[in-house]
Length: 222
Length: 101
Image (tube, rainbow over all chains, first blue to last red; front, side, top):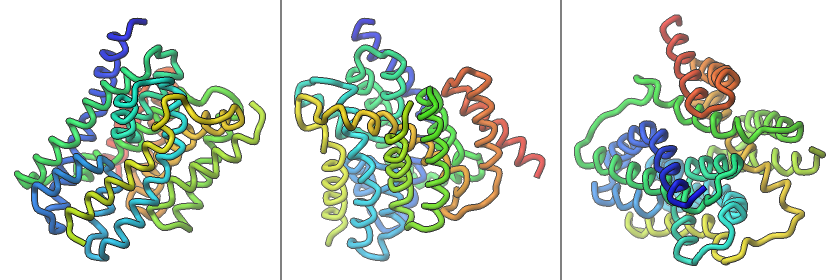
């Protein structure tokens, strides 16, 4: 498959994710301004941090002080380390500027789409992810600006938008589960997540559950 | 610490974790870590989905989101694991549950 097709496929697939991202970006803009940030700082946070979970945690923890915010950010960011390792395998050898860009926009959604496409035989995952990143980055920043400057009040629960993210992640996982070991790891991830929700602080739950499940799964035979 | 410094510090923490294995031109790692790196995306996405379905507010609870998860699984099975089929199946189940309850 030619490289231009990879870019177009990335744009097409990235568009599927824009509705929930636009909605949550706008909600984040409203929430963080209400928490005390100026509008331009709200937008800057989406430009610089580009992590919905970390940014919502920041908005919620601002009254607790910068220490609590940074510890929470570190816990949430930990999952990017194995994501970075597996993505580096998928994209192969690339120029430094492209690797920096791909790392800058290494978010759950673009990582998921890219690993899914790579697993399905995508020939140029780097170009594919670049296209997905452009769609997701522009959606997140522009919708944050909309929420921050216009004060648009969106209630995700009212429209059921809060279920779109878990469904999206379920849809991203589905094609990756192919053999017995994948199925067992998926089951383990459910169990470890339930335990983590009961025992761990929010910032460490998903990272801890995914690490434990994949470590145990990697000891099993296919 | 000012709000601007806080944002920059969070950006630095997040980017450091994202670039940790991307800074070298050649992928790092031996063959021993391949099973882990292959399985981590599966575990991560299932964990994110499970947390969103079983604990949408941060605490374990039975809600319409559980129906969305079941509907998503059915949608995935029916549409040969397509992303759109999973999302649509889950959203339909979610809205049907909200209408009934």
